[in-house]
Image 1 (cartoon, rainbow, N blue to C red):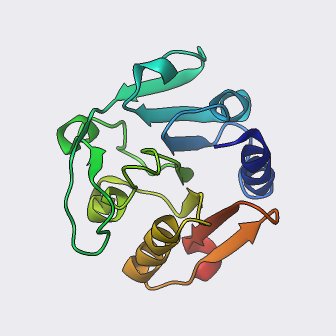
Image 2 (cartoon, rainbow, N blue to C red):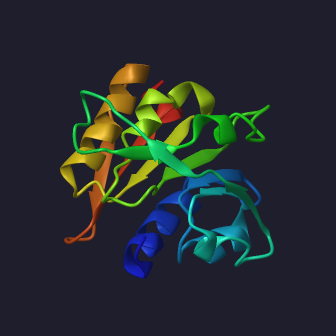
Length: 166
């Protein structure tokens, strides 16, 4: 997530979440530090470069494994489901940010594994890319709701908000 895009997403979240809310970030990055100053952040990451950079973040290592799905034909990998089974998800997260894995391997595995994730607020970064946009739409369809897309004129992020759609 670029710093400019992170700022847009963080502004949106500030209007929707309280300080201390539980946030699951799928794909750590430069925006993780700012998130951790306001929220209780758990971050799923495959790349050791992004591990343990910020002391207030709970990092979960989930290696990428081959992934195949007819809907997301360009998506080739997703986080190992076995590693994700150990997520601290007894309760719902207040928000889930889908910003990983990197765009070159795709994020379609999120929809296929949505049963592992519990929230009323799903934020999809990089929805200016067709497959990320389709991922947001697929999750909205899964829940029978609509989604909204925000842009700064260059980059997009999309939101599936189950509370707003209720």
